[in-house]
Amino acid sequence: MMAMKKTLLNKDRKMNFVTYAVVIAAFVIMQTLSSQGKLGSAVTGYLVPVCCYIVLAVSLNLLVGVCGELSLGHAGFMGIGAFSGVVLATLLKGSVPSPLLRLILAMAFGGLLAGVIGFIIGIPVLRLRGDYLAIVTLAFGEIMKNLIGNMYVGTDESGFRFAIATAKPKLVGKGKWILSGAMGITGIKRISTFAVGFGLILFTLFVVLNLINSREGRAIKAVRDNRIAAESVGINVTTFRMKAFVVSACLAGMAGALYGLNFSSLDSTKFNFNTSINILVFVVLGGMGNILGSVISATVLYILPEAMRGLADYRMIIYAVVLILVMLFTWSPKVKEINSVFVDKLKRLFHRKEAKA
Image (cartoon, rainbow, N blue to C red):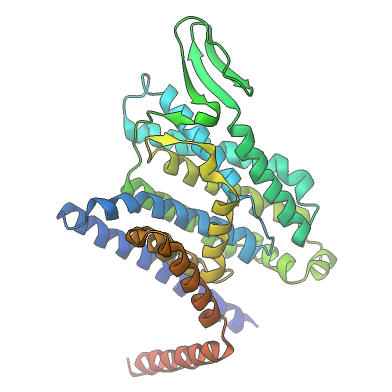
């Protein structure tokens, strides 16, 4: 029993090492190419959004793949982080001159606010399971999108102003709306960087992988695999589901803040149902519970439609066909059998080299 446990721990550590190695290697390569001026402006523009979607995919995989709970409202938490982060960064522009510090504070605030709202929403929502949970989280995402679309945040002579209204309220004296309802936020100072995005990916991997391999992570997996059995041995199902939900929401909020501060304008329509579905597609195609798979699929599937913009109307058709083919190929029993044989051969080769050494 102890030997089996040790083998599993070694396997997890090797997989974690590979995940970190792939991410670090990709960052070094892209940073080197960027410093040498070998990356075009289009590719450079993809770097920060790709980092954001990697974080979103990994955080959703914690909830969907590891915890086994289907959520369709991830874009809602992303939107909370994006707008709260941009508003805070704008308000701090005069008092905090360092763009890097403003960005970090905005990400921390966006993540914290998304986590708090995730906890509040999770209290009633996590009593549901399966399709019911998916429908409620979908409704939450749409509510947040429409709520943000009617929010007004700004400053005037009376101080900080906040309102929820269908028409723009009047300001006292000289003032300015930062968030202006359906118009969103314009004139954003772009302070997001690829280096900070890379740091957020590492932070996300550290949090998620350590949680998965901890005692709490094993309890979360037990709840996913057999809820009744988990309850029978004294595991508080609601508590562990809540932990996964809040951590996932918090990381999505941080990614949202980084995403929002990468553009000069922002509106609530960017965080709709389609965004939640796209993130879920990244998770499913990368493999449920497979963190490295989420990193790779988020990168490839975000860049693919952007790289095909020259094909105009045909690009989304090609993208859809590629998704179908990848899904069929990934879940094919024959492919799984070939993959298992290939992995076994690699393991034997690795063990032979160790024995010779």
